[in-house]
Length: 168
Ligand code: SF4
Ligand code: SF4
Image 1 (cartoon, rainbow, N blue to C red):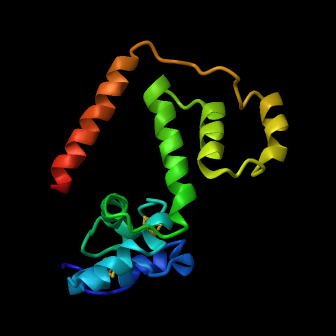
Image 2 (image 1 turned 45 degrees about the vertical axis):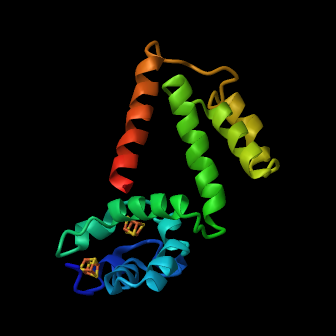
């Protein structure tokens, strides 16, 4: 409600022109407080295209944390199953990335790529660059694992519990 529609966030957002609603418009829709406008926000591609780059926070005279708000809106869109079609590959990538970190404690690129492809059935995407990445040592066949993987699983479990409390 502190947003007074100066538009500085939108002026600094690198993705504003690709969004259904740029950040300042999104703020206005939320301020109206109507279910119809909240659904518009949740069903928009804006919340999925946001890169959390924080350009908007740096410019906002009211220091409104728009990226944090975008994170919250993404969790709401998932829990209410109100998803823009653009969100599907993005969610698939997030889940594949987090599975890799949860299971190995590190990013395992090969596992990430395979999990992403099985989730999206987009098997040919970027296939041509795989051999050169492998030859440059960017893709490892086997994952590197941290020793204390139980702690990593505990962090994930605790984060999920915390999110449930916040969403109540
Ligand atoms: S954090 Fe998101 S909304 Fe803010 S400037 Fe970056 S991409 Fe745009
Ligand atoms: S910069 Fe801040 S106050 Fe200005 S429109 Fe964006 S969110 Fe609202």
